[in-house]
Length: 277
Image (cartoon, rainbow, N blue to C red; front, side, top):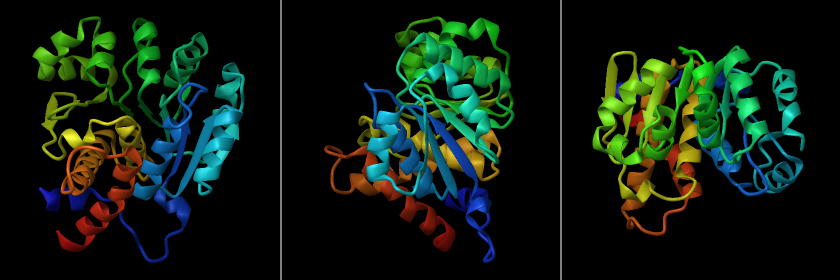
């Protein structure tokens, strides 16, 4: 399995520059959830993204900049203007939308417009998924997308209950993939579906069930999308690496793990795959 994951890793030629590693835009954050896009950005950087730009409100960008000076920050407190700011960022290879956005009409409008109009690969997570659930009947399938719902978000997208999703996770992820594209149904035994294919990720365990873990995952998969992987391969590799990072931390116990620690553990996982598989 590790050999297959190694073969999915983006190449790293000696003469590459940071743009070769992919340019990722993360749109998220709010006064209620200021840390979520920072965790996504950290996950993307630890995965090897070359350029990470955060689009958020000023308060979030200022707070995150103190922690992550490696990120480029673009802020606007009026979320109704976020679309034009997103399109003003040149050379972006992939977009992650949703971490910490919070629920609002502005979030719904921004998410649906980006789903319709964004020309590059797109990953939707968190409140971006809740926004899609509101306007789902108006939107069409994208083949260059990844959705990363937990069971509650999946239920809202499908118009059923979370318990129904839990009772038949395989059918739920298949139904989501038919409507949206590549889907990562998070939880115990994470499932990834694209077209008629369903893949189960066996890596990681309860140590990953902590606040912000999903934000790290979205940044990890987003980095692989930006670096040229197709959605299914980016999702498989990202979810596997995320799970293996959790396994490293679980050696010291499954309680007390921080999402930022999961992000930081991604680096040795990827480098070990490159060296040892």
